Length: 235
Length: 242
Ligand SMILES: Nc1ncnc2c1ncn2[C@@H]1O[C@H](COP(=O)(O)OP(=O)(O)OP(=O)(O)O)[C@@H](O)[C@H]1O
Ligand SMILES: [Mg+2]
Image (cartoon, rainbow over all chains, first blue to last red):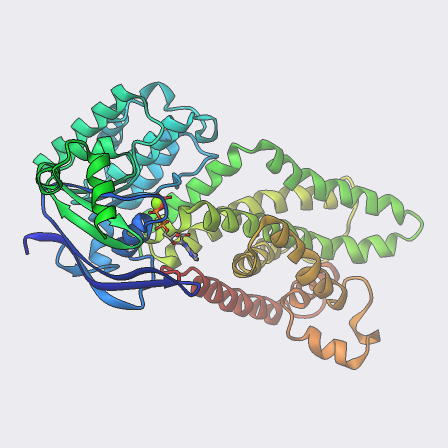
C-alpha cells in the first residue's frame, strides 16, 4: 500500500467523553505530515491510537500494512511522546543504551544519534538535570533508535530555540527523503509551512487537509494562522 | 523470550539503583540496625531474639522489595515509560523477569550482609545453613517484589502505594506466626494464614533456624505464590488503555 497510516471511521471515547467522533484520514509514505490543531483537539489521542495504546470504540487503523498494535510494528514505529517518556534517574547514555538494546540497535547508531540531537556534551548527565529542551532532544533520540520506518512525533519542537528547530526540521526532511514517514503534531502554525501535507484538526475532526500551498489558495489567505481561522469560521 | 532484553532491563534497573546510593545504604544498613536493636532490647531474653531475628531475616527483604517495586513500577506507569516499553519489542514477561533479576541480585547482596552480621557479631545461632537462609531471603524478596508489582496497579499515587505496606503486609506479618505462635491463634486466623504467602516465608526461616521441619514444602508454596502473583502482575501491565 502507498499509505503508511490509514485510519477509517475511528471513534474514541474516554470516560464518557467523545474525543474522536468519527475520524478518517490517511498518510502517504515518505512524507512529512503535520497534524495541526488547538490544544485538546485530539492530536495525542490520534497518535496513541496509531501506536496501539489507545482503546477504540470502533473503526480500523492500518499502519505499514498491519493492524495498529501488531507485534511486527514494534521495531518499525518511533514514538516521541508529548511528555518525554525517559528515565529521569538515568544518564542520557544509559537511557539511549537501554532503548537501543531493546530494539537490537548498535553502539554506533547510539553515537550517531547523540550527535544528531546535539547532546554529546550532556551524555553523562542525569536526565532529571537536563533543561526542558535537552530532555525533549533526549526523548527524540530514543524515538530515532532502531531506524523506524514511521516516526510519530508529538510536539517535538516545543521549547526549542529557532536554530535547533530549523536543524530538526532539516533532519525530519532528510529522514523523509530516505523513505521514512513522519507524522508531526504542533499547535505552532508557523511550523505548518515546513510540512509536505497538513491535517487541520478541531474537536477530533479533520477540518481540512492538503499541502500548505493548497490550503492557502483554497482559503485565499497568506498566513497559516488565518487559514485556520477562516476554516473554523466557515463551519 | 530474549535473555538480552531481560538482562538489559535488569541492568537498567540496577543502574537506577546505583544512581541512588542513599536507597542502597538504607536497604542494607536499616535491617542491620534493627537486628542490633532487637538484640539489646531482648538482652535478658536471648531466646526471643533467637526466635524473632531469624524470621526477620526473611521478612526484611520482602518488605523492602515490596516498597521499592511498588514505587518503581508506579513511576513507570505514571511517567509513561511503561507504555513506551510496551510498544517496543519487549514482552511483559521479559519486563517482569528483568525486574525479578535486578531485585534478586539486590536481595542477594542484602541477605549476605544482614545474615553475616546476625550470625557473626550478633551471635544468632541457627541449626540449618546460612546458604539456605540466604536462598530463602532471596525467594522472600522476590515474593515481596511480586506483591508490589501486582498491588501497584491498584495505586494511583505514590502515597497510596506506600500505604499498601501497612494494609497488605502487616496483617500478614501478624498472622504469620512471627510474633505469636500460630497454634495459639483463633482457628479462623490459622486457616486464613494458610492462604497468605508470608506465613510460608516465616515458616521456612523458622525451620532453618531450628533445623527441624521440612523446608521443601514451604519453598514450594512460596514458589507457587510467586508464580501466581507474577502472572497476576503481568496481566495488570496493559498495553491499551481506555
Ligand atoms: N482520560 C481521559 N478522560 C477524559 N478525557 C480525556 C482523557 N484524556 C484526554 N481527554 C480529553 O481528550 C481531548 C483530546 O486530548 P488530546 O490529548 O488528544 O489533545 P491534544 O490535541 O493532544 O492537545 P494538546 O495540544 O494540548 O496536547 C481533550 O479535551 C482532553 O481533555
Ligand atoms: Mg497532545
